[in-house]
Length: 505
Image 1 (cartoon, helix red, strand yellow):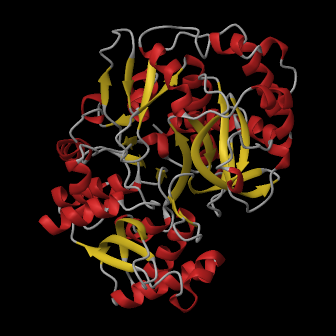
Image 2: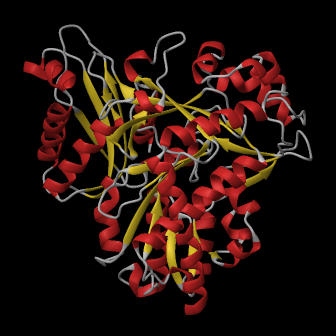
Image 3: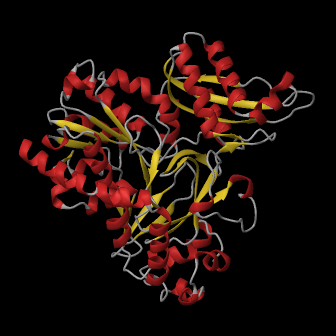
């Protein structure tokens, strides 16, 4: 196995040279992909509608094609779900990634073309390993297996040639044979729909494997880890899997979970690697082991644009090209892809932490914020505040959500939080004060509204009982890696719903 590990490591590191090229020549690479995408789609229904044949520049493209969202592309995608082809992209599209992104009732079906599967998602997966092998040349990852917390898979009954599942399920179903050999548990367990049974089966199936890496959303990884420890009677995961060396995570901010993982995997040599992989595409990989920034991957068949946050509400907001962005400003990502998404706003917001090369951090969602009083609190603000409050009170957070408290009579407005702890703070009131104080430090608008409680009062925080969010998701039939608790909302829908459930339980 050591020889095989050496071969795999050598193959993975060969890609590093190409990554260094797009880091050095970002605009050339993006220009080339822009023309490839436009040329590829010129004879599709969409391409003919916008006369892609006559588009010569990125500026012409921006002027001619309006910015899209799922609702505007939905009529085209529904036709594709029914088997029509050459609508948004010329290749036959038979796979769709079902995504909710939040606990919203509406499901999105994102087309996954053969090109986006190979040139984007699979390439991103390989690059993730290439970067790890380059940063850890003495790794032994390929001497064992990778534990993958897969999604669930269903066949789309609208057309027997079309299939859908969440993204991880689509990827697992299309993996090459060699990749399947290095993955655990087997597909029948990885793609189970019932997450309660699935966690038990995954634990049983993997405790005797030589697991060297784990990939999954932190929340569900912790659930699985606790099942494994309960089953084995061990104190931590290294006692179960002594060769565990890599944890690959994404989808949610890792900071609130870091301390829990240090306890689950008590090793200074454990490598944590963050990826930015969504149903719409694979966008970023943490390429430095001493930094939490992610390298924006520029050669995956994606052309990028960025809308400044202050322009989000405009009817057709001006989008900036890669060479026009600035450091530490919030932008909504707009993508054009080899899966047929054209000027598509995916709903995530990012900041650039470096412009040479282009590195980013995710700051939130375009719709997940609280701005009921002009305070503009985004998820990044909330995560910083919670991380500091946890650090200073010894707490560990499992899940949370927050929404506004509206003005009532003479009373000021405020924010109402529901927080479920894995480990309670040693002083709950101090936790609230630190959280509030940190929000004031990182967000001047929030601080101004909090001045003398004139517009915003001190946050109201509910200490939720164990399994509150799990039970809420279960009641909504939303258990699973693709379904996440909405962290912030500019309305009371989620807060009121969860409080009502807490009251009745």
